[in-house]
Length: 114
Image 1 (cartoon, rainbow, N blue to C red):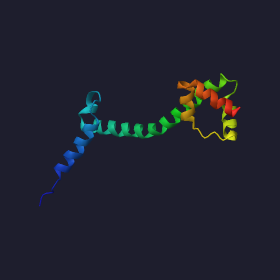
Image 2: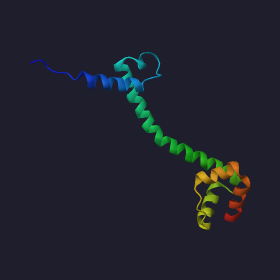
Image 3: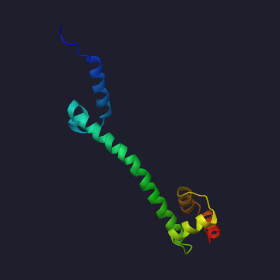
Image 4: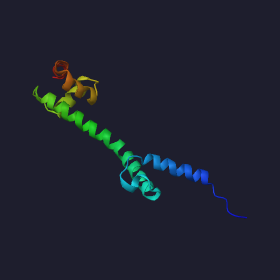
């Protein structure tokens, strides 16, 4: 008896990968073996960079807070230490937003911390 191959499932699996490869350049978008490798690598980068994105945003918030508090005569580390001691429960994301878009509110936070 000949071997039965589930071509429907195989075709579906390949189409799924080729759909993910849409927009790639050259053979990466339409040749199965090349597209499979490109998509796998792309998914690895996506997984890695979801973690890196959190790192980069925290770094950006720290830079913005530092720039904001230096105008009031403090450094970032001094400000965070005093903010924790004073019981300020605002996270870095909110503090950075205040420093960028609402300087008067940020100034009030800095004065409370001092």
